Amino acid sequence: MPKSRKSADFRIVRAAVPGVQAVEARSDHVFARHSHDQYGVGLMLAGGQTSSSGRGQVEALAGDIITVNPGEVHDGAPLGGAPRAWRMLYLPPHLADTVAADLSEG
Image 1 (cartoon, rainbow, N blue to C red):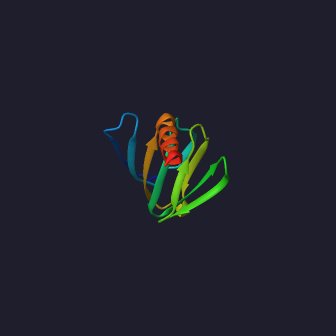
Image 2: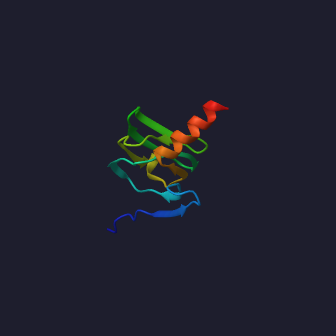
Image 3: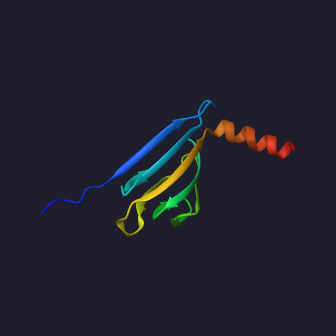
């Protein structure tokens, strides 16, 4: 009996601002626990996922905003085994701090 094939399609875009990265993904891959060095802000485009994070168990569906903090250990699995699609923007902490300072001054 053939094994089911997992699919993943990732596109990584480096922005003109050093350290900023955009990721567009469609995948049914189950991600093991990991972390990122950057802040991540994104949007679920299709499907849904469940993940364990610093905030506990989280589910996100199409249209939901998704976030991750630097060093926050999390995982991710598709809801119902179907592929999900999302876009993420990763910002280095120093840039996020600069933006926050600019916002608080204005």
